Structures are given as C-alpha cells and as structure tokens.
Image (cartoon, rainbow, N blue to C red; front, side):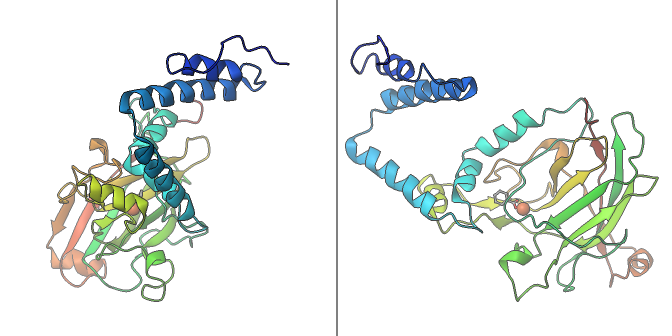
Length: 294
Ligand code: BEZ
Ligand code: FE
C-alpha cells in the first residue's frame, strides 16, 4: 500500500493531498508538470469559487471544443491562440540572440509540399488584388548574406481568404510558394496586398470572443518559414502597420519588429517592368537568422 501521509482531502489542504498522491511518479518531468498544474488549478478554483452550474458550463465548453477538432480543424489550438498561450509558448521556445528576427505563430493555414518557384515569380495565380513586390535579404547576425535559404511563404488574398478556405474558387497553391536564395541571400517575389481576416469564429472560440466583446480579426500579414543549414528555422510574419487591427490582433501575434513598410510605387515604368498594370505596393523586409548553436 502506498503511504501518502497527508490525510483526507479538505478545502484547505487540497493541493498537498493531490500532489502527495502523485509522489511515486517515475517520470520527473511529468511529476513536476502535474505539481504545477495542481497548484495553479486549485488556486484558480479557490479564487473563482465557481458554482456547480458554472463548473458544468466550463466542462461543456471544453467538451464542445474537443468535439470540433478533426483532421482539418483544431479548436484547442485556436483557444490557446486567443488566450495568448500560443504566443507565450512560441516566445519561450524561440528566444533569439540580439539582432535576429523575431518569430510569431504558425497558424492553421500552412501547407506542406508547396511548389518551389523561381526567384521573382508571382505567387498570385488568379490576378485578383492590388499588385505587390516583396523583396529583401536573408542575413546572419554578423550581417553576412545567407545563401541557399529556403523561404516558404503564404498569405490570404485581398478578401482575407487562404486558398485552402476557398477550394474550387482559388487555384491550388494560390498565394503560396517556396523560394531559394542565391549567394547574395536576396529574395524577391510578386503577390497581392493581403487583407485582414477573421480566425475561424463559428465554434466555441468564436462564441467566447463574442461574450468577451472581442473581435476575431488578424491584421493583414504574410507568413514565412525560413530554413537554412546551420541556422535555427524561423517561423514568422510581416505585418501591414496601417491595418485597422494592427493593435488588436485576435491571437496577439504582432511584434513591433515585424511591421513592414508598404510603400505605394506609382512609377509606370517600374510597374511595367514587373508585369504590373500601373502602380504597385513595394515591401522591402530583411530577415536575420540565428545560428543553430546560438
Ligand atoms: C494565421 O495567421 O493564419 C492564424 C494564426 C492563428 C490562428 C488563426 C490563423
Ligand atoms: Fe495568417
């Protein structure tokens, strides 16, 4: 018989009794995690003092959140996003050396196995939206160009939808592409200006946001995953600082260092050179990768 020596459960000693019950846990990391969870959960319940009805409502909320999850939808990640937990886990796991570009959330709309395109290609396959040139350089923290870096980019269209949300309406792989840098570390591609969009808000997370008086919008952004041998992989975005939701991102993904400058270029000759009709948005943004061992 296991000896626990903490007596019977009472409101006052609830934490000690439960932690003592887990004392024999062989996996020390699991033991530590359960200890912290027990302490924080009991503290939360003692502070909130939920009624039985409120506790049941919480259980139902979590049950429905789980029931919404399937191969394509992860409502629990969305919940973690709107509570700021995804960004906190991201921050803890991506502490970068000074000068390196900051990371932000991956989001649910990344697609693996996207076609690699020649540098300079247009990732907008349906000619809808305001033309945009995006270019810059991938460097290390000492300022040297990073050759052979693979950029995986994806973005919503000018109506705020990813291709995977509008299958049949948008071409497959619309506004997605992989690009590989040469010796100069430079990248360059054409696209259209993205628009703000709501995170999926027809489930439990959407209901919660409504009850909290919060909107579900993410400010306009482009997603990047940048990988290169010898460097830490960087999952990040660049944001439009003039977006109406730039200061109230539903998932807290905005960082000041990720605000890009969306400049209007009205030079018809430069537009024509890029194959654009008249004017275009010119976005220049450099990324700095941290060494794998830093
Ligand atoms: C996204 O940017 O694609 C995203 C991130 C978190 C939740 C929903 C969408
Ligand atoms: Fe996104």
